[in-house]
Every structure is written in C-alpha cells, then in structure tokens.
Image 1 (cartoon, rainbow, N blue to C red):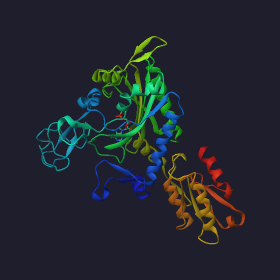
Image 2 (cartoon, rainbow, N blue to C red; image 1 turned 180 degrees about the horizontal axis):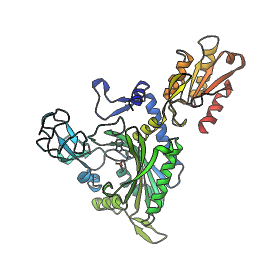
Image 3 (cartoon, rainbow, N blue to C red; image 1 turned 120 degrees about the vertical axis):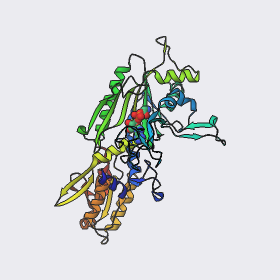
Image 4 (cartoon, protein in one colour; image 1 turned 30 degrees about the vertical axis):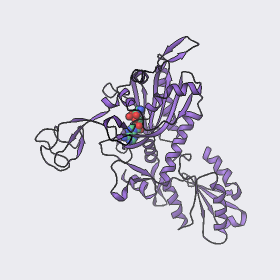
Length: 438
Ligand code: GAP
C-alpha cells in the first residue's frame, strides 16, 4: 500500500488536502491524473446506469437539505458511533479501536496516544453528521447538516421525477454527488474519508417484486466491476448478518475487494423496503404513494439501492491495476488500468529532438488532442519516457522515429504486452479508437 500511496502522490493522482498547512485528517485532493481517473469512472457508471437504461433517470440534488429529512431518515437519532475521549491529550477514538487495551473508562486502561492511565472516558454516542448553520444567525433553528448519503435527495424527489419523466414502477433514479461523514478512524489512504463521493441508484419496485430486483441488481453490479477489468478473484459478496444490517434494510450485500489491508466493502446493495418513503410521508405530511391506474392499485414502493463510493472504487482500480514486473532485468511499475478508465489514452514521443521528428510528433499530438486525452513528452531517454507512462497507466505510446520521417509511419507500443506495431501516422487516431473501444 505504501508504494501505491507514494506513486499516487508522485504522479499526481492523489494529494493530501491542505498539505502545505500539515494536511487535514482523512480528506484528500485528486491531482491531474486522479481527477481524470475518477471522472472516467463516474462517466462509465452514469452511462451504464442512466444512458443505457430506459427505466432509470438521473438527478443532481443539493447537498444541503431540510433538517427534517435527517430526522425522517433516522440519521439524527441513529447515525452514531460509540467514541471515547482522552481527558489528558484530547484525542478521540472509536470504542472498538484495536489500539485500546482494556475497557475505556477503566482506571487501568492506557490512552494509546499519550500513554496516561485512567484518562479515557466511558464510550459516548457521537453523531457522524457534519453540522453547519444556514442564514446569518448561529442559532439552533438554523442548524442544518451536510448530507451523509446522497440517497435522501432521491427519496424526497421521487414524485417530482416520476411525474416529470412519466416513468412507471419499476423504475430508478441515479445520482452522483458528495457526501460527508465525521469519521473517527485511521484512514487507509482514501478508503475512509470525511468528504467523499457516492454513485447511488434507488430502484422503486412493487412490494413483493423486491427480492427478484434485489437479485438482479446484485448480479448486474458485480458484472459491471468485472467489466472494468478488476480481477474476479479479488471480488466477492458479503451478506450482512442481523447485527450488521442498517436500520432501514431487510437484506444487504456488500461488494468487497481484497485490499492489502483485507477484504473491505466498496459498494452496498440494499433492500430498503418501504422504510424511507413511509418515513418521509409521515414526517412531511405529503402522500408518497404510487398510483397504478391500470391495476387500480396504490402502494408505497419498495426500494432496492445500489450504493457505491466513487473514491473507494477509484482506490480499488488503483490497487488492482498496480503491478511490478521484471522486464530485461529491471523492475517496471505499471498501472494496468482498463483503457476506458486510464487518465491518459496515449503519449506521443519524438525519439530524438531533431531530423523532423518533433514536428511530426507535434502534428500527431495536435490531431489526437481533439478526441483523446493525450500527452506529449520529449524529455529524457525513450526508456524513461515509457516508464513514466507505465506508471500513469497510459495504454499506448506513439513514437516518431527515424523511419517515420521517411515513410510516415510510427510505432505504437502496447503498455501491457510491450509489443510495438508500425502504424501509418495519418491513421493513429483510427487505430487508437479501435483499440480503446475493444
Ligand atoms: N445510502 C446507503 C449508504 O450510504 P453506506 O454503506 O454507508 O450506504 C455506501 O455507503 C458506500 O459509500 C460504501 O460502500 C463506500 O464505498 C462509500 N463510503 C461510505 N462511507 C465512506 C467514507 N467514509 N469514505 C469513503 N467512502 C465511503
């Protein structure tokens, strides 16, 4: 993991937030390559969930919502972790932190940071939602929350979307957006952060059809990740036991990845029953029933949720793609990212900076730039330039060499096989299009 974290910083995938001020705990920024990777991931998700399906609509709801939303959802009362404070050094820990040796509150238990005995409080419940104030006066009436999940923005808009899009149950609403949780755990890089992005889809179904749709979405989501090139043996389902189920869920499966720090969830598929819409109906006083005129029925739909973390899924992509290989007696570090997710699709190199090679390379680069995110590099030996692109996960290297200026052909190097093919300079665009969509 340390090697990946170091590569992520060195190559501009991920930086610590506010680094020049010493950083902000469990908050991260994406650099040029990371921003492209995450954007490609979100675009593929949107395409699969919204554009390719006629029964799912997109939504972009606000982060700030009416405070009653979080009472109805159960987050004000129940979105809590048991935490322990050290009265001496003021650090705060989860009550189940493995560094705590002995029961918190006991006079013999030591604080894992300052080492003092008996300074830890008994566990207290701590709400994970970030509070802020709306309007000019910091008074209780104006307290609002940064949303801890995007799902609620979908539930409160379910009737608006249903009516404006003329969908019929079963149908879904998908959204990508920021969520915030005041997590009190050591981070594991971008795995658990305080600000993160979710890609959530809520599928509204007739009660009784929920199990069938739950199975459908479980299979679909696993297939989607495999289609991104993630190794199948590193993926598995984990069904929640009765003690793990969230307050709203009848059944839940995590999709887990085998990280260097163990098997961990990065997407959840939940059968949320009619819990959310029933609660919002109760708290808002607005009828949220679905009226099926043709069957002369009305009911509160059940909801099957697919809830993925964009940052966590991006971390899965990076961890899964990271390889160290022996090539001609040297170790090459390569990110074997799926070409559709790779931040840069190709890099263009003049073999040397003379004899017409830079001019031709520039021309090819300028042609490609309109269609693909490509990079021009004329610095250092060609071997070093290839290695830099291997680390960035760039699937193709286009090299203009001595022969190119004679016969207008270039070599295209494949990141994974290391094979080089000669391609007509005027057809590199066509060649890349075919390889990138294959
Ligand atoms: N709407 C349901 C919901 O939010 P969740 O299991 O709490 O369910 C869903 O979160 C996904 O959101 C997780 O699988 C994970 O990918 C992501 N996620 C949750 N908390 C996170 C955090 N603190 N940092 C990064 N990603 C997080």
